[in-house]
Length: 264
Image (cartoon, rainbow, N blue to C red):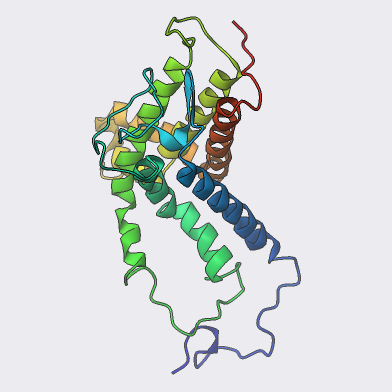
């Protein structure tokens, strides 16, 4: 039996949809940007080079969980994988922020529409005759989003430490600030804003409370996160661009493309 727009009892029209605007533009832009990011991040993750320029470390490679890293005495390294890991150390850590973004409620909407046409836009039916939602493998794995959130917080804390040490010079003395410091600072602020604006974060803070009046502190936090949540889409894109730009900046400095301008 047909389902969806072809189900019995629904009005039948010859056209697939009645939208006359450029509804395809948004999913096309989404696909273009995400493909560009996937290509860039894949190249950088497997490059295993030019990700550290004292005192800056690329967010793709922090923290280093293997011993086959550049010498990064100022960064938050934790070589838990020892010397047996021969591939790029970025492949270990990127699974956590990648998992957080892949299971993010907004990103699901973005890439479902862009890559799978599920559906491409409002009032544009998807080409499939059946819909199972996220009840089967692999999409049922989207339920792990709340757990990836905890890992995302840990990653954000580590990136915050990287920003702190970016105020040192190459000798470890405090008082340094260059353009790279500002780049990493802007990135970590956007990462925190995106992470805290997450729907799971909002639920963890106040989702199970029955009486806000009995929990004034959590209520204040819930209000703050709720305001961020209204900008979750914008923060998702802004933080995606910022983390790529932060990595690109460190790469350019580490590869010798230009010297990091210092303010003091």
